[in-house]
Image 1 (cartoon, rainbow, N blue to C red):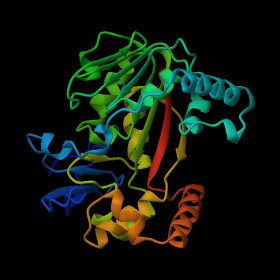
Image 2 (image 1 turned 30 degrees about the horizontal axis):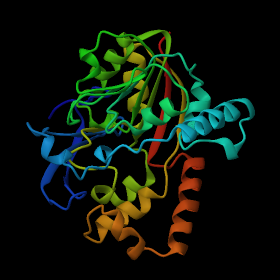
Image 3 (image 1 turned 90 degrees about the vertical axis):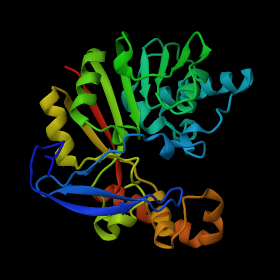
Length: 303
């Protein structure tokens, strides 16, 4: 059996998981490391494109902002940085406040999908933004300040002040390889933000193959906290902070799969009551506070 891609242990146990997002039902073999608890897909399909079809959420149409909305978003972000007040916080503010990139910093988003997140940064005043995603339909130059590249970051010659991976790290087959690439592409003192599911999740321990963020076969790797710390330090990164940021999705998404339903947003309101959603949200908050949630933000620095 292949060694764990996070800690190198050969002590692993296999389990089966099926494609459930689109309801395809195709079976895949994963392995769980007995040493660090990280997960990995045993055999990666030679062609992953069928699992990133037009229905995949990250490739929905980008929603642009009017000139007035751009101005308001810029003012809101400035107010948020100055005051820290919750009412000024954009949807991505909880991690942006900790990173505090300058508007002139060169920022990369790996696995940018349709580029909506970068577009929101662009609408808020950021001036040097680059998205990388080989699965997008074609390259897009949205503005001189924002380009979406149909390629991997390895193919770029640029250096960055901040590299982000918002739920794309788990779609990479080799964690050490992508971390090495980020290390090389970051300037000295540059920041790396990785948001990803983690196998420390209580919902994984309880529900196993029904866990919505196992997401076979798109999620090729899912680290444990221990596994990620080991591989990131091996590369040379400083791991500054780990922040749990899981949501109610871990519960209602998993419950959909247990009911044999695909991940269709139109089904959600019919399957769950407002009271159930309220309970899911309270439970997610508690899990985050106790370190039991199913996803985290890893904040790293290249020394």
